[in-house]
Length: 493
Picture 1 (spheres, rainbow, N blue to C red):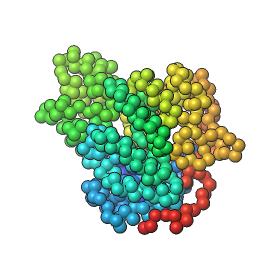
Picture 2: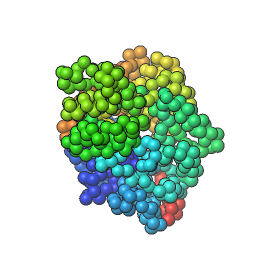
Picture 3: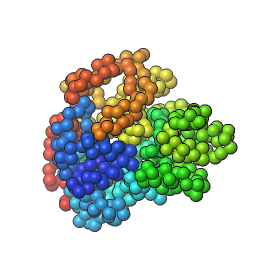
Picture 4: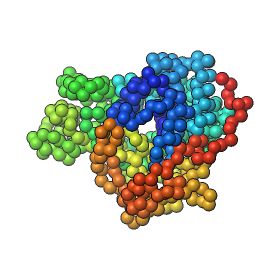
């Protein structure tokens, strides 16, 4: 899947290309140099973008969301989309037309991140710290877009909505599913070890939705991958206004602000609480100066106790002294096996939340399929292998709109994975310099995979890539063209 959370690069007018890439440097932490060097920008519209994706050699199959953020910017203009102006009736008609055009070309539905800026978890912001267009979009716009899916009887939606009012958010997810008559993938079912009532409440609500025939499907955070980061680029404390302000700007500006004694009290008073566990539990994993080596593998809380300092002062004094190059590790807030078991026990919760190609200097959550087989099945025996295969393959294919994938059956495309269950493992984290523009990323490889076939060609043999590029763009969820939607069934423009 590409285009998650309403973010993407089409439709984008040529004069907005640089600004659209700048947004992604913070909201998804993708290096600007990689985007500039890696994207041909041989498109303007969404159909042209899909044509470009189809021309590009790829080793995996791709199914695209239509990102709502780019639609809003195209129709309203950048400033008005960022300001959250409500579209006029004519502009809503144009948004519907663009979504229909994109889905006619092969888009599988639409996506939006709606982390309201005055809510408790607005952790993914624009490069300057401001909200993304979808964060400030209007409910009526979502209703208009859901109506397009209803009229087509096709596609699905993916949305992350956090306003601070859980009942309101849940009611809106339900409304979108009811208006459209199509599946709504809801991000995210996440356990917080210090507040287990949160995921239990969400699981109970999802069960009530199923009992009433409302197709809201929760995507569960089933990996315990943490964050390795430095303050050179870290952005996932954006749920705190004080931390967001201190970590925006150039490297020199960040260094100055994080070292400013006048800001420290606000940073202590407004501790971040969304992306990671409690800040004092963060571990010092990469001190640079020899004088700081004794603090290696100390939590901030333990170092603070020994130094007689506040954990925030320990963290920022060291980071500033080391030119923001000190490496820290933040464990996720979902470490409890029993809480994980409760999420896994719901047979309709999707596994995942990998964030794919995003946050690659901090996070390696794309390991979750191998982690599922090793940890959830082999180590803790929460579910059977057959159940795991269904949860990792058939279920997501069904709810995400893959028309002929996800199961092994005669006549289906030969997307096949063959692995040695006993040898399967997630390997240690490493840094590789393989991104366009000379940039680097963190990865975790896997061992135990004998063969991976994509559309009948071997792309991985004995854990090694073969160089085959047999992946396809799955327009409408399939490599085969569907019947066109009659114009009489589409919403009027």
